[in-house]
Length: 191
Figure 1 (cartoon, rainbow, N blue to C red):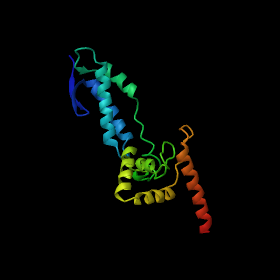
Figure 2: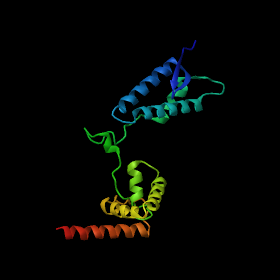
Figure 3: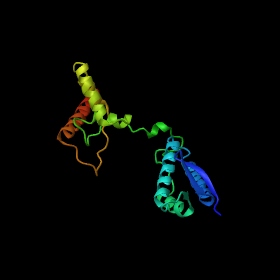
Figure 4: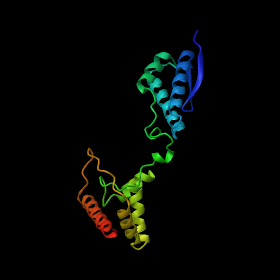
């Protein structure tokens, strides 16, 4: 006789054998403990449950409806243990704001100097949306947005170039060069 428990994985009902259920509970408890300081803990656990359900469903024999240890063990093995993200464990006492990317210009992939790319990364938005907003502001402000872009270009630091990424194209590379030169001249005048 087979003992079966009904569980909810990613808010979907599943039938699972008792021994497999015990193993699953241990795995999810360990995962929850590992993610205790992660601000996205609940979302990650839901994604984890979905991955487990998909792995088990893929391994279920035809016409089978109950997840056994035969399906669960290889699924958990393939998914592996959960490691907390580096941003959550960066430094003791660090806040969740530390996981927000810094506000920097990104030359690689930029059209002009990388202000829109930097804003998009910092705000966690699609870069196309930020660029469209910039163009709309350019028309609605009668060109004053161009002045704002220039100010941001001078104030925002540049992100370091990724050695494995592509080289900035000619316009962003020149904009970076001119901006750094102008900053150096202004720093000299300020002394």
